[in-house]
Length: 327
Image (cartoon, rainbow, N blue to C red; front, side, top):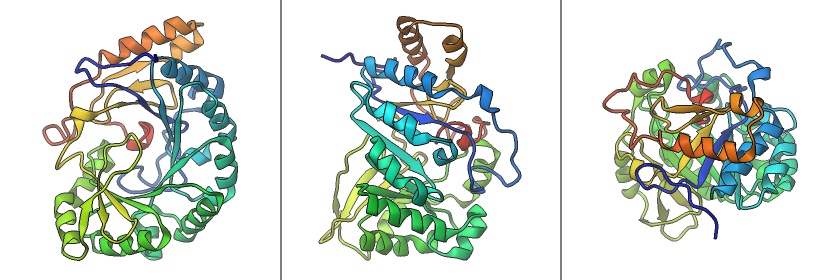
C-alpha cells in the first residue's frame, strides 16, 4: 500500500505542479508584464536530474499526479527528455502539461511519445487583434498548436479562458461554440491578485457564477465530471460531449479540497498559490541530501501549508508573479 501525504488540515496531497521555467514567450498583462527581465538565472534552475529526484521523492510519498507548467514550459530546452523520465517514475500515473500552445506545433508529437497524457491550453480570445492586445503574441500559432495536439492524439485538451470584464467577457458563448466544434473541454477562470499585474487584472474581475447563469439561458446545463486533480467544478451541455469547468478562487474558493503543492524552477516549494508559505529545496539537493532526508524535508514543508488563501481579505499579500510560481 502506498503512503499517503497529508497536511495539517488532513487534506491528502497527491498532486505537484512543476514549474520548469519562469520565462514565457507571451506577455499576458495579468500574468507577466511587457518588458519584464528579472527572471531567475539558469544556474539557479533545478536541473533535470534534480527535478527527477524531487518528483521521485514525492511519488514515494504517495503523489501520483504531476502537471508540468512554467512560465511557458515549452521554452525549456529538451523538455520531452524530462517528461519521458518523469513518466517512468513508479506511482506517477497522471502526467499533464499546461501551455500557451505557441510552440506546440513543433513539440506535440514528441511530448505525446514522452508520456504526457493531457493538455491545458491558455486561450483568452478567438480574435487575432484582441489576442495581440492581451498577450503581445499571434493567435495563429496557438491555433496551429491545437491542431497539432489533436493530430498527436492528446485527449482531453482543455482550453483555459480567464474571463475579464470589458476585455473578453463578450466571447464566452463564442468560446463554448469553438470548444464544442473541436471536441475540447472548456474551463473558465476568475482573475487572481497575483503580483502587481494580477492586482491590476482584478479591476476586470467577473464572478463566474454570473457566467454560468448566462450560459444556462442559452444551453441546457447538466452536472458533469472530468478526470484530473484540479479544482474546476463541471457542467455538461446536454446533448453534446462538451464539459465546461468553472475555476472560482474568488467567488467560491476550493481550499477545503486543496490537494496540491507547487515546485518552482528554482527549487522553492510553494504550499499555497495565494500565500507566501514556502520551503527551499535547492540548497538541500546541492548539499548532498540523501533520499530519506529529501522526503523528510518534504514532509516538514507540508506542515507549513495554510488552511486557505486570502485573495479577498488581503489582495496585495502575494507579491510574486504567477509565472514565477508555477500557475
